[in-house]
Length: 174
Image (cartoon, rainbow, N blue to C red):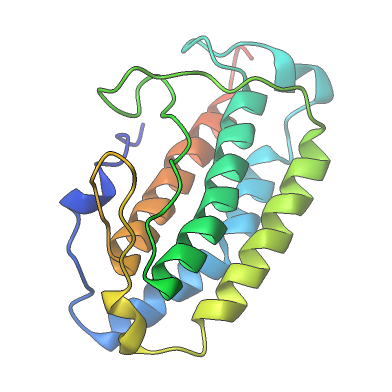
């Protein structure tokens, strides 16, 4: 099982090279496919059945979509040199903070579509830019202020962690 990602500010402030940035952007663009493939074998009733962690696969998907919504707001704040809004609370196992499981009962297909649409818009905003955006930074209310590369690298790890939980929901005994 993949370990939960560290805090974004614990990651390098910038990629080592422009090629690494391009690799991150490619992985960022493929994020919707990663989640769709992880979720495709999950039968409808399983989305609402708790995993051994106590969370439902739907909770993991709701959380990833909440972060993608937040990333759009964070990008706008960073581009404008403004503070960022409060990020979504962590899920159990993600951080040492007091986690709050998401509440909701959305359709997984609609969430996957929303995630893909938002990700495409965010990718379109970032892809034509080069290293000049590496310095973008926006502080959250708690004072942490990740750079764009830190948050992007964290989002990639965050999605992989949640995709692993979705795949686990399709495993033996589920």
